[in-house]
Amino acid sequence: MEENTVAIEKGLELETVVLQNIDFAENIGAFREVAKQFEELMMMYNSAIREVRTKLEVLNDEFQVKRSHNPIAYIKYRVKKPASIIEKLQRRGYPVTLQSVEENLHDVAGIRVICSYVQDIYMVADMLTSQNDITVLQIKDYIANPKPNGYRSLHLVVQIPVFFSDGCKPLKVEVQIRTIAMDFWASLEHQLKYKTDGPVSDEIAQELKECSDVIAGTDLRMQNIYNTLKKTE
Ligand code: 0O2
Image (tube, rainbow, N blue to C red; front, side):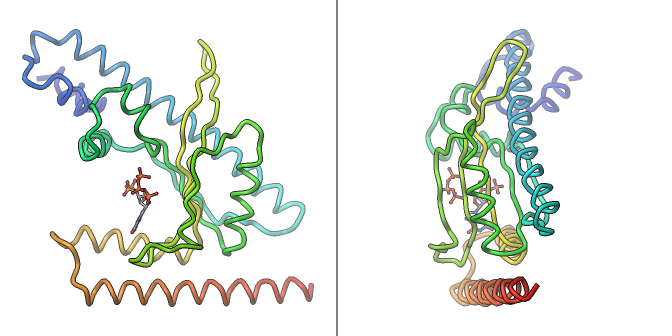
């Protein structure tokens, strides 16, 4: 029982699936080994997040000193929970193994960068992706092309080399960059989706979309105010 608790704390939902129908007591050795490997992989993703965060914080500090402007208001980050990792692998029909996590998922390590203004989003993205140890694997611009429901954000998947005691490992990190206003909408829309069992009614969906459009308009106006004041400085 105690082993089981330890196993679950270490994210062993993954192994429960991998080893399903196999007696736990008889396979405690294998169970422990996979738990250790899973913990190691999550440590690596956490390290990759730290590397990218540091890059972003350095850029923000430099801007504050040189231009008296912080393009980044704040940064949130997370490593995907074991249950979400399994759910996503199963939903997409991939094997539930550690190798499959690395090969098939690009959002195990996730960073959300919240900017004050829309122009800051593209500036931060450019400054990050032009660094020569960063490889850009994917860009999805949901600002230029918002999702039909009104979701707006710039999504990047980047790969960064992280140095460990036994060598260097390239790791993927998903970076979502959005304004405070876009984040406000996305956070509430996410919460509202979880509050309903099925899909929301057309009426509510339309209401949410309209809120998103109003917010996008406000973002634009705030950007214009900022640019006007900047010119007169
Ligand atoms: P969580 O808990 O935020 O991680 P991919 O996940 O990239 O393989 P997909 O669906 O093409 O597949 O990804 P996409 O469109 O780049 O979006 C992935 C993430 O963006 C989501 O992660 C959300 O964080 C965010 N997102 C995308 N669409 C919406 C939306 O309509 N509303 C809100 N609130 N957020 C959205 P996860 O895995 O869903 O969740």
